[in-house]
Amino acid sequence: MAKAGIHPEYHEVNVIMTDGTTFKTRSTKGKAGDSWRLDIDSKSHPAYTGGEQKLMQNDQVDKFSKKFGAFGVGVKKTEEKKSA
Image 1 (tube, rainbow, N blue to C red):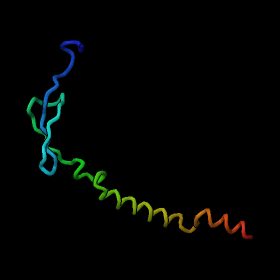
Image 2: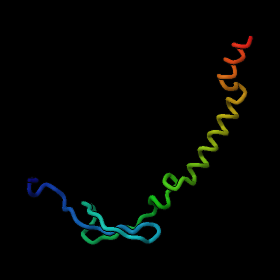
Image 3: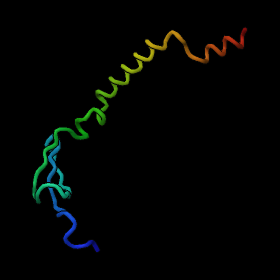
Image 4: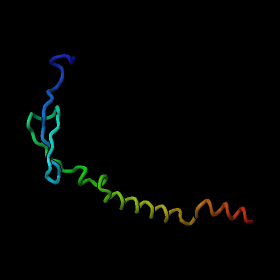
């Protein structure tokens, strides 16, 4: 068993998601019965929804193409050497 008196109190808290849905979890932070309202969660964060992340990936591809597009793809260079 755990040693008495050295561990923080573990209690139930309510979590309120950005869309208003709630769930209960247990935590050592706050007080029993506290409610935590989230500013960002899996329903609104771009990493989970794919919104901003997809745009960022497209920008990265464009930057790469602009920077290295003139070099072409390595496969074409090999094919040119074989035909020569």
